[in-house]
Length: 160
Length: 201
Image (cartoon, rainbow over the protein chains, first blue to last red):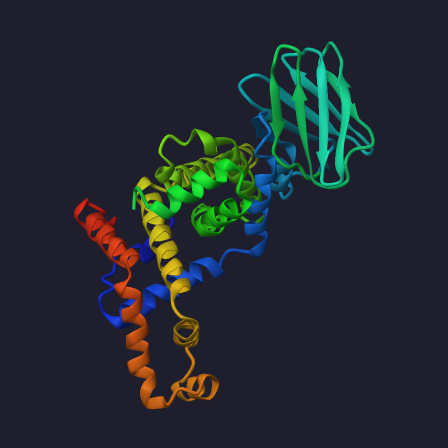
């Protein structure tokens, strides 16, 4: 279990000047410890507030496997695979050299939007749930999938 | 603390579409989200991913918060859940490759509750500090910087006679203590003490 040593002064009595000053120092330090980028990311999330899509969670990433087993396995990684899941549908993605191949589960037709900071592209999802994004996005992007049965699901930011 | 009017107002304004209110919410609670990520000992890349997910989830969830004042609790729980997801994904593959199970990287509820209390207290203190006159803010900033400025240097920088620094420090801190928000803060601390905020031994 992580050490909880710093919890002991959690409820310090701040009636004394030194204690109050120390509490202020902690408060300012807690803010300064947070990277500016972390805060900026949080602020920019607000731009998505009018999107009604359900957020799909990353439930599998072959890259996490790779990071962990790189030391014990000699064979190199083949294809990056990702899965995003939500209650109504999942998106399975495979990253190739130039493109992004995907399938929605359960398979059905629909449309896929690729949101990047530069704009949005749309590509069809065929009747067995397949789609291709070619070329693959070169920066951060989010995928949003809508199907005729009313599913509307969006991933978080993806970086390949 | 549970019905902090500042938080209620921020949430209401953010629901209405006020980006500034949203920014204030993020600034107020980013230290809480970040602190919980570090408790799970995530690397900087994973912390960034968890942060992105948590704020996107909040954007989605904002209008559905049953009790806007429960926001810090919601954020803490959501962050902990996302951290656990990352930790588990990593330990699953670790287990597969090494046969070793490091998945029992567990942060208990008391630790999370403590982070919430601490984050609220810190946010209130920062807000109080920001309301002080500029002169007090300058003086106190020098006194709490690490390492603190010497009285001689404070005298050089702010032009306060060395003999007055002590009394001015006391006046600034008293000013902070006199505000209503501080009284509320102090009471919530006492309530937390009585309410069995038992530190794990």
